[in-house]
Structures are given as C-alpha cells and as structure tokens.
Length: 243
Length: 289
Image (spheres, rainbow over the protein chains, first blue to last red):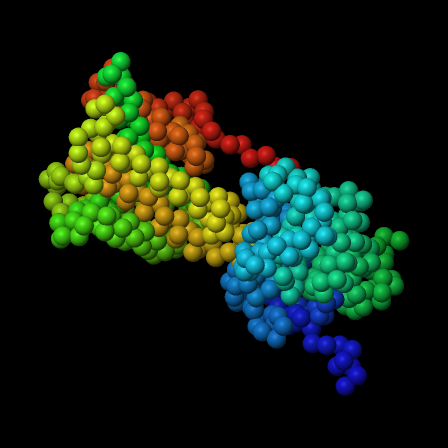
C-alpha cells in the first residue's frame, strides 16, 4: 500500500518496444516508465537509439510492443493523434517553423486547444521565456539557436502536455544557454507538474535534473534506476561522465 | 491614349483571372512542390457545372455558390483518392497523374457537354462604365477576383486553420507533432484551389466562350504569372498574374499582335526560369542554425 502511494501509476509505460526504419531494427525490445510529474533521462551514445525511442513514442516510425500513456494504449496511433492525447515532442533540430513568426509558432503549439485558453497559457510561457515575448513578431528562422530551443519548448508547453519529450535540448548551444534552458526545464516540471522524458548525450547535465534515468546501448536498455544511483555507477561514470 | 488606357484596364481584368489561377497553382505548389497542370481543366469543368445549373433554371449566384462548393469537394476528393497514395513517390509519377487528370477532365467535358463553343452568361450586364472604357463584366469580374484574393489572404493570415495549413506546407513533420492533421490540410488546400479555379473559370468564360479547351491558354498565362511573381509566394503570384494580364494585352495590341500573345507567355516563362528562377518576389527564407 505504501509502495503504491510512493510510486503512483507512471504517466508512460513502455513494454517490449521494437522500432526501426525499413529493414533496419534500431530498438530491440525496451521496457521503461516515466513517473508522473517526474523527469526521466534517456542516456546513451550516438546511434544507441535515443532519438528513435522518442520517434517511436510519437508514432513516427514503425513499432511493435506496447506504449501506454496515462492508462491508454497509444502505440499504432497516428502522430497527430498521439499529440492530441497530450504528448508534446520537441524533436531533434527543434522543428521550428522558420518561415513563420515567433507568435505564429506559439499559436500553432496551442492549435489543438480552445482559443479561450490561449492567453493565460501564453502568459505562462512568457513567464518561463521572457525573451520570446520581445521577439513575437520576428521571423522564427532569425532567432539564435538558444532562442529557437526556448521557442520549441514554449510551443510544446502550449499543447498542455501530459508528457513532454525533449530530444537533446543542449545540442549546439553555448554552456550558459544550456544551463538556462535546463533551469527552466526544472521549473516547468516543478511548477506545471509536466512529466518529462529527456534525451541527452550530456549525461552529467541530464542526471542533474532527472530523478530517474536509463542507459541505452545499441537498442537495448543496459542500466536503469534513480538518477543519483546511476551517477555513482562506476561504468557509467567512466564511459558517459568522463571522470 | 484612350486606346492604351483601355488596353491596360482590360489587361487588369484578365490579369485578375490569371492571378486567381496562379494563386491556385501556388497553393498546391507550396504544400506539395508540384504544379497541378490539371488546375485549368478542373476550372473549365467547374464552369460547365455552372452552365448546366444555370440552364436548369438556377439563378446565377445560386449556381455560382453551388459550383464553388462542388468544385471544392471534387478537388478535395481528388487529393484524397488519387494523391494521398502518391505521397513519397517520384516527381514524374505525380506529373503523370496531373497530366492524366488534365486529359480526363478535358475528354469527359467534351463527352458530356460537347466541343462546340458555348456562350456563358455574365452576372454583370449593361453598358460600359467609366466613360465607356470598361465593360461591366470586366469591372465586376475584377471585383469578384479581388474579393476572392482578399478572402484567401484573410484566411491564411488571420485564422488558425489558415495558419495550420501554412505550417503543414512548410513543415509537415513538425506540424503533426503539434496535432495538425496534415492529410486533411492537403485535401483542404486542393479544395480551396479548385474553388478559386472555379471562380476564375466562371469569370473568364463570358469573355472567351466556354469549350473544353477554354483554360489551356489561361493556365499558361497563370503559370507565367506565378513564375514571374515567385511560385513559392502567393502575393507575388497574384501580382505576377495581374502583370501578365497587362503585358499580354499591351503586347497583343502594340507589339506582337494577338496571334503571338501566347508565345509571349512562353517567352516570359523561359526568361524567368533562366534569369531569376525564384521570381521577382521569391523570398529567401533566412534561417540560423
């Protein structure tokens, strides 16, 4: 009983997930969960299958196995239907609509929701990312990399997601900006109780914000557990944290 | 001078038609990067539907509304049934489908309605206006065109659905992740393009008479206009359409004569493609990474 109170049903439960592109299998049956209002980090080297895992969750690649979001199976659904069920995915490359303005990008983030909810949600996003407010009318393609990442996360939050998938938010950004973005991520998680699945190559950074983590190697999960525990793990330290 | 002014004004009137068809071409081009060669024939077919309705006793504007609606449905169904399965196929395969559609619409129209020229009524009857310079039909059809163009502009600029359509055209993957039904947006784009084409067909038919080949010249002028303005830029395409209308009329009256007008459109196409492929207003999208 106490166990159940301490570990409420996970927001995301993945079991036996296989995924691949055409003939090439990338994921060979992985199982993991993302805790409600938690941050789970998905670690691994290049080509381990991290991005593919996120794509599988969003229905962008062919999969088998079960994916359960908040008690409902979402595997096999179309990408747009998975988004409509509350999975916001910030893809690698950020998915910015370069040709549109910052404001239009944000409005699109809230596309599936009713118009009346837009204003308060926008205000909340500006609370997290005040810089976006100054750039509302600017063409999104002219933003700096850090600002585009902020826009991508802001856009994803406007979906009011149950689960936020972030694909390498630190990629290509200056350390100072990365720290700012991770700080905001932590705040979003704490204030708005958004559950986050974070894919990162920078393991040290990811283990700082995450409460749980698992390590992917060539399409299989080799280690999983509380972030603090993984931090102590000898092999992870040597291979992924570098000290 | 009067003659010159007259040529310019009637150039604007036919330019409006080219602008509409150019806009229809650009809408589909933006979403799919293909030029729908059948756009003109679809518009011609729509005009026959309107004529059939009018001959059956439906009042003009009623027939107009029914035709536009029916054309939008036909356009959306074509996208859904024929082009959805073509997603990801090579360009030539899509071109094949477009040419097939062109031939089908042309032949079916000939088979159903005959190949003889038919008179098509204009809702704008009466003596010329503005000191006798402009026929009422030219004035009315330009007004209708401008209303359509303004409507399209407002739709894309100020509505969420229009915004979602633009997003789906620019970045379908990202759009899906935001919950936008990209397939539906493509069908809607085809529907809108077909609707715009139908209006253009009904506006040009009283001038050139209706027959199954009515739109072949118009499509060429519209294509030239779209390229001139920039095939990836709706506003540019509209401008290009009007410009081609004026150029065509002036050149026909003073330079090459009416027999060679169509050649002029081809010359413009070739010149634009070699000198400035992005068109006059071809926007280069700035992006930092």
